[in-house]
Length: 208
Image 1: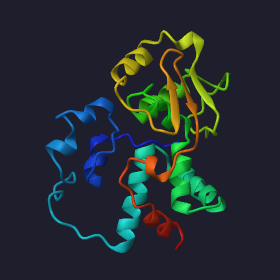
Image 2: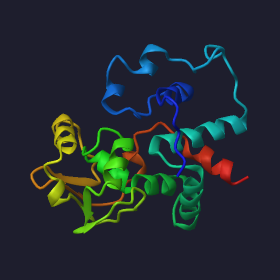
Image 3: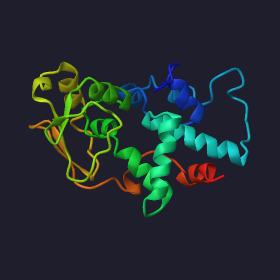
């Protein structure tokens, strides 16, 4: 899948909020949004009024970047959300939260979703005892995600667990630090999503 390869801090500045794309750096004074809270580019400090379409597009782009998915996959998730019972926008966010790379990040095994995605790609995790190396794998209620036995001495994972010890785990997950595993006790609800997004704008954009 195509990835954004430019400086990631520019994304946060363009969206006007922290998307936590750089992991621990985002919590320090080095964060670009903290230092330069305006859009990148020569005219970044100028005021620009967005059209209705522009606001809808920005919400979609922001959410895509936050979860690290491409346009094709995002459209697929939207179609899935439309076909589920309930509110389409909330269904979409629930699906995005259910991605394996997001669960690994939420559990503190990765300092950012990008790093969590790489760890999954490299085969560091089992789901219900079976190796899964697909970051877009959607977990279900009752699934148990565990650091693979041969990867439990991995330096990066051990450091991440230590750094994220005090970081709260969402209520829909149950973490066992000793076993290096996390259980999905329920699927994420709208209240569990910590990005300031107006998902109804995304629904309006795709419904045109």
